[in-house]
Each structure stands twice: as C-alpha cells, then as structure tokens.
Length: 452
Image (cartoon, rainbow, N blue to C red):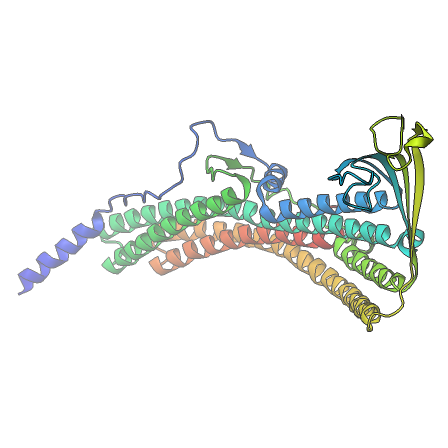
C-alpha cells in the first residue's frame, strides 16, 4: 500500500513538472481585405463613424429636408408665374356658331396665357409660415449636433475600450509568463528540498488561473475590436490598429469656463428653444385662419377662335378681325364666417402645444444644469483616480519584485507570491480602466459644453 502511494505521488509530481503550452484559441473573425492595416486615431474614428452611423445620417437628412422647407416657405411669400395652353373643340349644331355647348364661343376655342398668382393673407404679412420653417430648420440643425456629440461619446468609449483591452491582454500575457516562471521555480526548489509540495500545487493553480485569464483577455480584445469595427466600417473590417494615447489625456478646464461654454454651446437647449419658437408660430398661424384672405390672379394671353394675334370672333364675324392678346384679373376675397368651432379648436390645440413647449424648455434648463455638475464631477473624480491608480500599479509591481526575491531566498511563502501577482494584475487593469473612464467622462462632458 505504501508502495502504491509513492507511485501515485511520483506521478502527480511528474504531471506538475510538465507544463505544456496551452493551445491558443482560434476565434472566428470576419474576412477583411488583404492590405496593410490602417492606423486610426480617435479623430479618424469619429470621421469614419459619421459616414456610416444611421442615426447621425438620419439627423443630417432631417436637417436637409428642413432647409428645403424653409426655402419653400420663403418662396411662397412671392408671386408665382405659370403658363397654360388649351384647346376646346365643341361639336357643332349647324345653326349657332357656339356649337352644342352654349358656354363656348365657337366650335374651336384656343387659350394660351401666362398667369401671375399672389396670395395675400395674414400669413403673408406676418411671415408666420416662413418663421416657423426657420425654427424647424434651426431645431434640426441642433439635433444634428446632438447626434454628433452622442456619437462622439459612443466612439470614444469603444475606441478606448479597445486600447484598454489591448493593455489588459499585455498584462495577462505578462502575468501568465510570471506564473510559468513561478511554477518552474517552485518545482526546482521542491526538487532541492527547499519547499513543500504544496507550493508546487499552489503554483500550478496560479498557472491555470492565469492561462484562463489570458484567454479571457484575448476574447475581450476581440470583442472590443469587433464593436469598434461595427461603428467605423461599412464592410465590418477588423484589419486596423488604433493609437494608444491614454497616457496623454486632455486637461480638464476650470468649472467657470465649463459653465460658460454650457450656456453658449448646448444644442439640447437650442432644441427646446426652437421647439417653443415653432409652437408659438403654430399659434399665430391658427389665429390667422380667423382673418380674411385675398388671392389675385393676373392673366395675359389669348382666348380666341383661332390661334393667332388677330382673328374673327365666331359669334360676330361681321366685326372683322380683332386683336386677340389681352389680360384679365381675378380677385378672390375670402372672409371666414362660421365653421362650427373648428378654427377655435385648432387655436386651443396650438396653445396647448405651446404651453407644453415652455414646460419642456424649463425642464431642459434644469436638466442641463444638473448634468453640468454631474458630468464635471465625474470627470474630476476620474482624473484623480488615474493619478492614484498609477501609483498603486507602480507599488504593486515593486511589491511583486521584492516578494519574488524573498521567495527565492526562502523568506516568503507561495501564497504571498500568488497574492502579489494577482494584486499587480488588478492594479494595472484598474489603472487602464481609470484612464478610459476619464476619456469617456471628458467626451460626456462635451455633450453639454461642446469641444474644448
């Protein structure tokens, strides 16, 4: 029985002594073009994302449509010109020159005239429709900026998530190599009789954990690269590299400057203001419907029995050839009298929407002020965390170096080595996460203030 125990113990020792390299995982990747990978900066990523993001392009399209609506509303204030040509052929009755339709002046009637049309109504005087279109255009332009700033936050988060995952992958590689070395050292010291077999078991456990951590870091890097590729490329190309500039962050301006920029450059506030302006013009347009309107049509051309400058009138041929070109003016005066309260109801609807727009404007102002403090304090805290976690990562690296020396000298335990290795991984990952957090916090703050 004792012999079998010794054989089993030797077998376990031999198994722990063999630490083959784990097979690398072959992740599924989209096929990209066989070309050198482009180096993409954050600004490059923002420019690329604008070209393919559906929400941003929708905002651009809405702004373009609103601009055309404003052009149309302005053109509607001026007279319009058109031309029409008609031929009226009437069956004759053999007796009257007008034929079988008494309203016609002959069996052949030709009309060819130019028309000048002008609507003269309250909306023309007050330019209500045009001013409403101006408000809609300004609102759409502000929404484009909102979409652009929101897209910048998304791209920044995914861009630096990839940079951070690459750093974490490097940390996982280094930790895996340290676990390998620690396992080899513990095996050598066990063979020399300096440490117990439990140290080798502990080192083997640490080795397996770090191997799994390396695979998880590889998966995380692949996922973040894919997420960024979805934002940047129309063909889902993963063949690119990003510039890791996490160690060169932007400075955070003082709060008074931030507050000034927020009051001057915030698109959400402009959206609320232009929405109120639009609602106010809707009220004016509804009220204008109670007032009279006038439409004038000036026509010049011919309406004759022959398509000519001079011709005989079929009803009075004895008058001889007469000049055909001439003009006539039609004026149409409309006075609203009674419509069962429809116009009044539309006024109340417009006034209700105007009041709601005022409420939304005040809420946006409050929310803007609250977000300003929230986002600034988040950026301030993130910047402080970067400095503190940088020092913590340096201390963790130095601690691991000293504990490794002590372990080799027989003055430290395997548990202390493993704990120091894990502490270093956590400290470095926390530092990388803090840098990404600060960059995202700056981008989020700029949704309120604009770029700085």
